[in-house]
Image 1 (tube, helix red, strand yellow):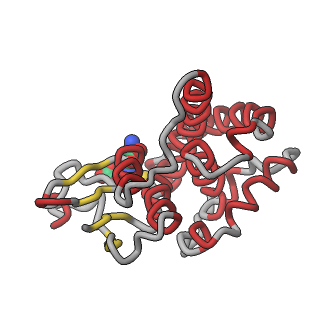
Image 2 (cartoon, rainbow, N blue to C red):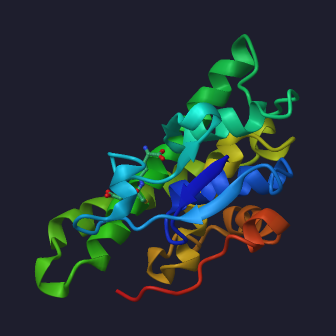
Length: 205
Ligand SMILES: N[C@@H](CCC(=O)N[C@@H](CS)C(=O)NCC(=O)O)C(=O)O
């Protein structure tokens, strides 16, 4: 079984974290994909060209961090990441979606910064900067929620991967005035699964 990733994708990092948390290193090989490149050989493997992508039994693959993590979590027959049933399941989904909203926002922002300076949109960057600021305030208010403090789950992993995009790009500046949220993220950054998937470069504005 092969998990295709890039080292700079926060979506791929979610799957890379789950692979390590579930101790699947021997069953799931982690391979880097060449994305955003004309005629990349990766397009023969996953036509969408996106990561993460998991090639599982009989050569069938699945993409997307939520779906890939679902498969990884169920491989050992002892899933721990599924949303609970009932009201707690609604809370789980509400929080995961807000974490994903932050992740989508920072991803658009950082994607813009990776373009040559003359191709960047100041409007998009400012729109996403304001979204990140609002959502960081939202998370400052929700970070003590029992689902964000208890056993590891998808809302936690998704939020940690979104916030820790500032390991690539310190310019996100969500930590300013939010020491509780910074302490929460710091605990995840120190876990083996996050440490091993930390960025290998930083990006300046
Ligand atoms: N909704 C997807 C988003 C995945 C995604 O956008 N991945 C980006 C990397 S951050 C990608 O593969 N981009 C390559 C491309 O757009 O060609 C998920 O949750 O995994």
